[in-house]
Amino acid sequence: MDFQFYKVGKTVDLRRYIKYVLPHFVVKLYNDSHDFQIAQKNKYFTDLTVREIYTLLAVLLDVEREVKNPLYLEIGVFKGGTLKFLKEHTRDVNFYGVDFFEDFIPEDGNTHVCETFKTEAVKEYIGNGRVTLIKGDSALVLPELKKSQTYFDMIFIDGNHTYEATRRDFENSLVILKKGGYIAFHNASESLAPDFMYVANDGGPWKVTQEIKRNRDFFFEAEVDRLRIFSYLR
Image (cartoon, rainbow, N blue to C red; front, side, top):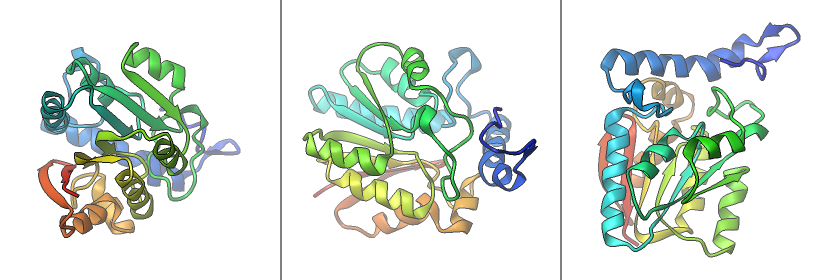
């Protein structure tokens, strides 16, 4: 683990360590103990469980059967393991990923930090073809995608896990999500690690998805571990 962003002088900022880094260790221990992680030999660097990532894949394969050259957007790419897995198990899907990458500067309120990866390194890891990575703040990038009239068949929100940021990503996603498309959220459970910390803080993705469940424009498709998926009916 690289603590360069957490150091204050020559010491580690324990407050930020506890708030940002420790939850990821908790997730790793949880996944290891439940044997949910992707097999090590496959080398997919993702914190999604096997059940979660195969649920995403199953929905995306349905989209691929119904839509010609579908578009998938992921908010919060990290090292790119989820994108890599989905790309290698689909044929015609084109992928977009939005992240700060090497420009990420952790600030109070941004929960999505464990390590940072350079854009070019992530591109190399995912491999050539069918993937467009966009470096920047999702709050700014998604409106630009709207301006360029880029619309998606599936959007996966896994960036900053505060309620405010998740809600903003959700609202910005609606204007670029096709009717009948799918929108998915990670870390949207109420009690699994580290989601209970986000719930206790301000509700996090769980609160956002609870609100969506009451919205008649959406159908609640699936809940698997920390993953929730909705279809957009409007």
